[in-house]
Image (cartoon, rainbow, N blue to C red; front, side):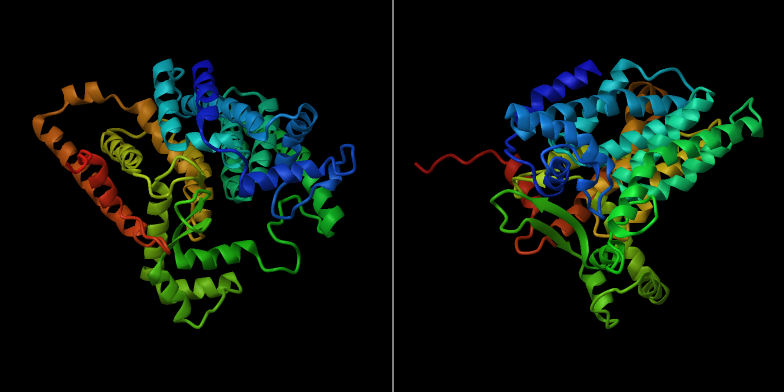
Length: 460
């Protein structure tokens, strides 16, 4: 972890961000509200769209920045570096080890995984956002349930999954799978032991969600322990997200000067026509969406497919883009190569995996939050569990040299042909999506050509 920590501590200050933006700034402002009266007040910071935990965790940093007159980003970068080191250097490798039942992941493979994470996500760690902390909490919860057979680890797992869904409410979709994992007795233990661990798991959740219950009751008069995501009596944010999801293939955020709007909307014309042709100016409930699915299943599945592809198509290693029209094909190429390597790994599976029922539950816990956001206005970070799963599979399982030596020339040719198909198809699909950017379509094919061609000499 030390190498990863030092790499991020060196890199992050070299980025040209000067301030927090949008969601990151909102979380920081929420933390400041804890001190609005001049001293710390737990109840003074509340937003129905956000959980209590993250602003509370940030509050010591806010106090430190104010008391020492430090720059906010100087502190958030240090915290981000530590988060990256723990997630890439320990948490995900530890979860992988417990899933596979093998030896600890070696240092080199951890560094390969960290390098892939750095390439795809490095600038996210400048900012105080909940995506990676929630992912860390989910990994910790699963590791506690799959690791050593200790009842007190059930308590830790409950607290960790509660933290994950308070940080990112969509992680509630993972709760059934995680709860099932907590309930099932591990090998060598009976149902009484499993019931005791499940009780500890529930207690851990209750301990961490009790403040949210108190917050909701105090501010909104609603006695639920979950983040509300919308005040009572107001339209559901998820319904609004479903509507946006019909009209756009992808959403990104611009903070630079080469694109005139902060919202980078990639239009989905087929989905937009689907919405408007059915006389729905606005979705008012899930019932309308289900009705659309019943009437137009294939077009709506097409919308979802474009969402998945575009959410997996990482073009920028940052949530806040400073240079929209910069060549991004090298990063995309690396990402598509990970997809190809994962396809080869799937093809190479020759026997059933040991402990596959628990493995399927873990995969469900990771992918259910991804499935829940597929119909919405999608961003790459929304499918973070899937991104990290693919990168981990390649970094921890691939043995390219041994594989190359063990296969025939025909198999090598087939693998290279598959690589050409994956890369070509992905670039084509990405180019079509990037051309749908409102106001100023991106031509990534032209970007590739411009970056590969040598610079022309000045006219003589």
